[in-house]
Amino acid sequence: MISPENSELFESITSDLSEKGYSVNQNALPQHLSLQLLDQLHVMSRKEFDTAGIGRQQDHTVDNSVRTDEICWIDGSSEAGEKWLAWSSELREYLNSQLFLGLFSFESHFAHYGPGDFYKRHLDAFKGQSNRMVSIVVYLNTDWQSEDNGELVLYDDELDLEGFKVTPSLGTVVAFLSEEFPHEVLPAARDRYSIAGWFRLNGSQAGRIDPPR
Ligand code: OGA
Ligand code: MN
Image (cartoon, rainbow, N blue to C red; front, side, top):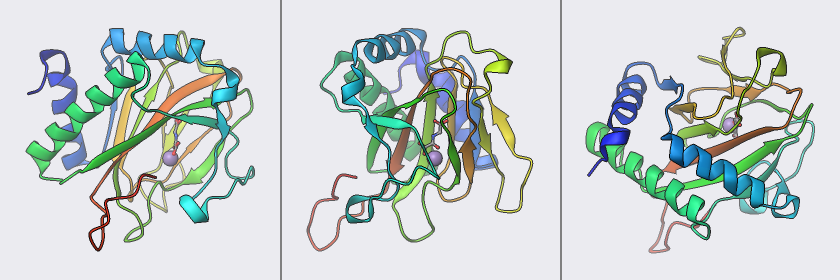
């Protein structure tokens, strides 16, 4: 069952994904959840963040010419993490019921970009090589000003050079098809916090359960 506070947002994400493949929603995450996630960030120490890498498992490498942020994977061990996972699971079920996507699991991390940090243009999934299907990004920055920069730029396809800029303000929720939209994070003038997550298809093979990240 979808809770009433999420219905408008989930309907908007669903119709945007089916019509254009991406969705940008301002002031969209329920405010109590945004604030709780923000509180959680404040109590987390810098030690809990690791330098972000590229690729998965044995292909994982750290390359600071591509991205310089630091991340912390979210599990249900804090109340905020638990609520976030419940929210994303509700969205996953809604997308499955409306678009028959067969989304099977979800993984997500907090990301901290210090001043000047960036993530160069990239795709979250390569066709046929990954089971990441829908990417979601949520922002946790209060009072973001245009001179703070640090926008997410979404490109419609490989040839699009202009892109579409999203301001990383508290409560903005972005969703897009992981294989279709190259995107990048521009350097910001101040600390920038986000959550990035991926809904995945079931990648289990030969009776092995789908391995985590
Ligand atoms: C990512 C990503 C975007 C953002 O982590 O893959 O593209 O705005 N993040 O934080
Ligand atoms: Mn990305």
